[in-house]
Length: 198
Image (tube, rainbow, N blue to C red):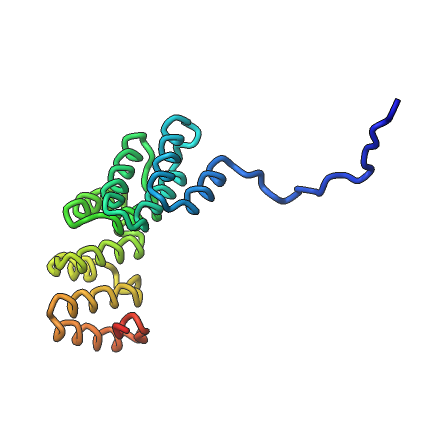
């Protein structure tokens, strides 16, 4: 009879390392996926598996759709956002920028209303900057400056200023962009390559 030798070495310690959650596993998979078919597969899994229906998982799917090159991805990111809301999951500081990067002007206005209701527009400069960028890119130069001026001076960052400056210049208003650039400099901010349009 042969005996099976057992190792006297104990397995490596996992003390201090948190166990991998389902969210973390899904997040790592989703962030690596780009093909739309793979994202749809993950989305179907999330729908069928209630424990996976979390804010983090939905944010990861929306983010992946927002950076995908497929034309339908933008619409799908907005639809996934709406589904997230329908499941009762509240968007957070990461949800709004991801979905705003994916949507057009009409959807952006609707999402702005939701961001106001949740308090994220007033409390997060990144959400405000992303919405400003959407309006500037879409040529809505009535809305972008309004957002800029409603943001408290102490919370405006270089991205806030750059977004509006670029919006003016790209929409054919270089004088307004230059005046805003000088105002930015007067507030002690130093232009970077993005501000200078390089």
